[in-house]
Image 1 (tube, rainbow, N blue to C red):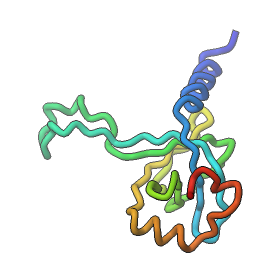
Image 2 (cartoon, rainbow, N blue to C red):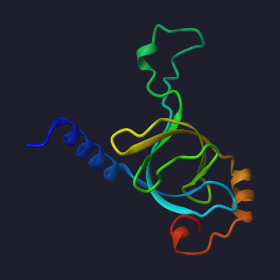
Image 3 (cartoon, rainbow, N blue to C red):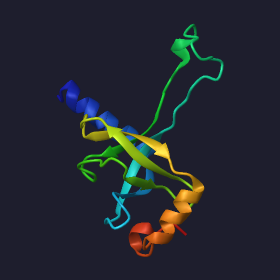
Length: 135
């Protein structure tokens, strides 16, 4: 019988496969694009909370956006790398956590539409890696 760590690792793998989103990971404009399947966790903050009001603190779910990468595809998440989901959605990576159960967690911030359009104009988005991501 498998131990609880193996069961937990398998369960996390099942969750990742269920909620994965295809994307392209790019460390910088001249870098090599890598096709990845990641999980995106958007910050969900209860709008009832006011600044300095911690009476509803239990309703705070996530304070930051983050993306979870499988370590088998991305062994290290670089700071300020791009994770591109399409022509209109991309994120830049920030601080990351060490590997946990085969996955890497990185805090991310959204890239504005103007910055994304400019960035995509400077790189070569042809090839099979970009298929289905950028049109």
